[in-house]
Length: 361
Image (cartoon, helix red, strand yellow):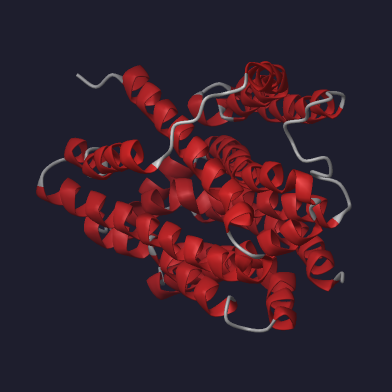
């Protein structure tokens, strides 16, 4: 029999490992590569990420259709085992300084508060039938803000000093937060909507879902090869592409025109391709040398928090508007526009921030 709590525990462990790996990879980029290569490195990172994001839904879709959904949960296991074996031989072992270890434990206090906040942000999705769960959103954001405030009073800080401020670093963190919030609605609900509206098979659903990742990869690779001025101009308009993509998805779902959904999802991928590398590049340029590793590792944390906020927000909104029964009954326009229209509004909030980040010298 299915055990939802065991499933949730597995996803929890996957989330921890993904977070640690992403943070380490981001923090190593400014240490291992010269500043003139950072833009290209971030573009390659986007290609690698998009390749993984594309292969996951596709192999999962084929496994589901050929075997079962349980088999789809195991498609990544061989790669995970290969990663563990490779890490043993590639990563050097280092002895840790006792004083450094003590400082790290102290610095983890705000991290614990932040993790509690993220857990609260997921309540609306975890408890969809409980209207009180929506309180997890403001409470979770309050705990994240508290974590930043507690961290600011420590001698050994964990988070970047200028996170979520009006500086270039602050603008970059806002972009990294708001755009994932807006994208969360498609991440969580697009596959469900495709199955409900058109009755697509898992394989075809997987092909459409990966459109975003493919266009993110292609546009990021292209952006890395244009001039600095062009990259900043594309960064300035990227959230506008995301807002347009969300509206096209809503229009396609409500009118039954599948190409509009695919086009909208592709525009969302372009939005991330136009913004992710250039925003990271701008942030790293503005970060003091002593904080580069800390700031780089903070970026994926902000991204993950954004997705958690978006999942909680739109999960609650889907319950409040009756998205699932409305789609199944063929009466879902209001619910669809509430979710993807809300995503467009969040993306538009990021637009002036992106313009400032792309405009400032």
